[in-house]
Structure formats: C-alpha cells, structure tokens
Length: 83
Image 1 (cartoon, one colour):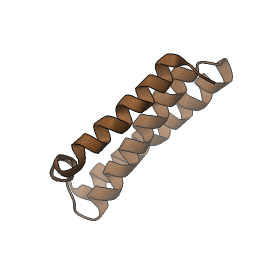
Image 2: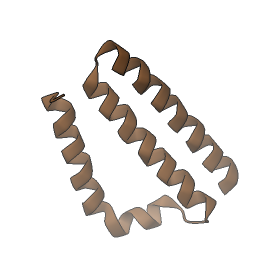
Image 3: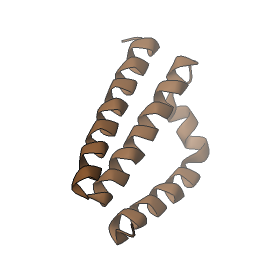
Image 4: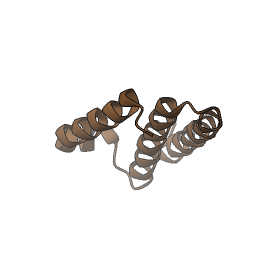
C-alpha cells in the first residue's frame, strides 16, 4: 500500500468512528462517544500526515509526551462521564 491508499483507509476508518459515535450519542453513551471521536481525530491526523509524506511514527516520537497528556485528559473525561 502506498501513502495515498493508507490515507484513504485512515479516513474511511475515521468516518466509521464518527458514525458509531453518533449512534452512541443517541443512546446516551457519552464515554464511548468521546473515545470514538478521539480515535477519529487520530486517524484523520495520520491520514493528513501520510498525504504529505510524513510517516506517523517519526512524528509521534517528537510529541509523544503531549499526545499522552491529551489522551489522559480525554480518558479522564470519558471515565468521569461529566456531560
């Protein structure tokens, strides 16, 4: 697979996450909504990077601490279910 095909696959997966988040929102499952949206953003970001020729592992190593902090914050919000 080349970068364009990988990016298309990432976008397709992100769209599926958004669809499932929408369904979960209708059922009131807010922690799952946050998780699915978080994954959709990550997949869209990976797709964007791949389209410009940057492989995520190289880029992730530079900002992994920031991403981990954001992920922990989102997880805390999901677990606390504050809606």
